[in-house]
Amino acid sequence: MKSPIWYLLPAFLGIIGGVIAYAILKNVDPQKAKKALIIGIIVTIPFFVFIGFQAASGTSNPFYFYTGGSMIPALQVYDIIVIQGHEPFEEIQVGDIIVFDRPSDH
Image (tube, rainbow, N blue to C red; front, side):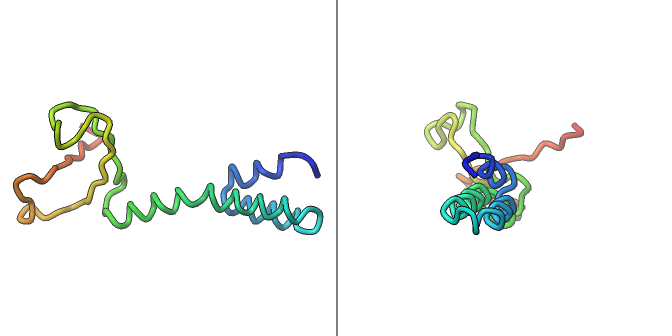
């Protein structure tokens, strides 16, 4: 089984594809089976990190790119900011950065 097709399963399906490729290859080529499983794990990790950030921040998109110039020197153009959702108004202090969500229907 010299075809790199076995690496496409985990590349596109993540850990599920890695497990499938591992199950198919483990008796034929154990080293390739382990590599396929590792690729599946590596491809899946960013997904779980993003889901974790969503849960921790309480927002559907916790990452934003700052593309303006009005916040220099606090923020530089193209800085990535991680937001925390639903902060009570009473807890906002001078110097806090506020991100407003514009609904898609407006």
